[in-house]
Image (tube, rainbow, N blue to C red; front, side):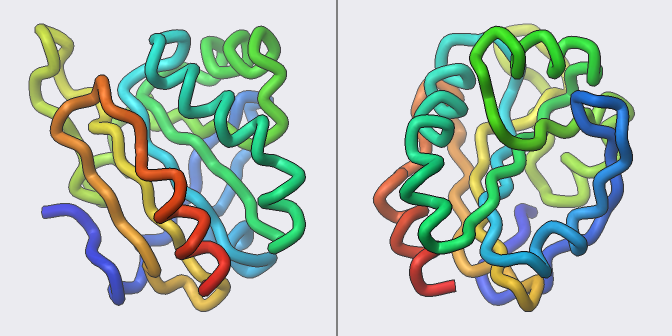
Length: 155
């Protein structure tokens, strides 16, 4: 079962695209956080989603919001994707599938791809509490960006 609104967000440490450890609680202490789980780097919908957040960076910055993306790809793939798309935020590798199940968003089978992330978006407040959660069963759909922005503004 996915993490729900009002629950304390599970804390974790994963490596980012620059092979540096990132602890989620250190990120949310700085301000509201969008935690976006995605099936895979370089896929069409995942790229559209991350580019939407990239293109919204100045708007998100006015509310001191941070975006963190998570996939089960290696950090090498995430680095290439971040560079190719000029993504200015942290991408985390859950290659060992430790965090995706913790958030309840592990997809056991998506068109033959086993144990990748569902497309899921969580807004986490500075207090570490989940303010918004959306888990999409169809990974071809993008998150509800307006709902994410509204949750960030209220976080």
